[in-house]
Length: 95
Image (cartoon, rainbow, N blue to C red; front, side, top):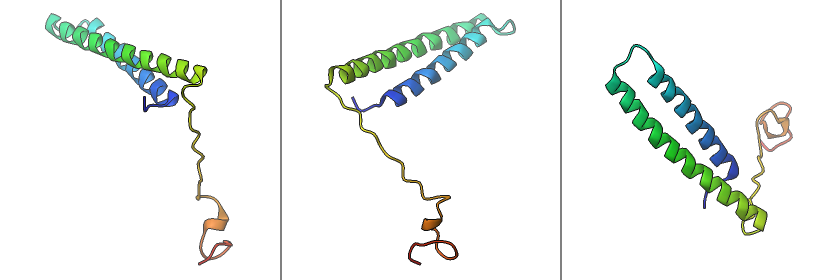
């Protein structure tokens, strides 16, 4: 399980948006029945993918709760807007 809780939550939200908008296509009055059927097939695939991601998220959260997985926290070291990393005037770093 290489994914993070945040990554999985993000992917699930994207899938939900895709499902929502594909269902909107099915409800359009100006499309053919064939187009609606194609969209319905896509919704079924998207729902299966979403459900797989949701199951993986549930499994990961359970593993974290059980102590089998310890999430790593990656610290961000941002250099922009910090004068000490600027060369030239105002910075304390080596030029």
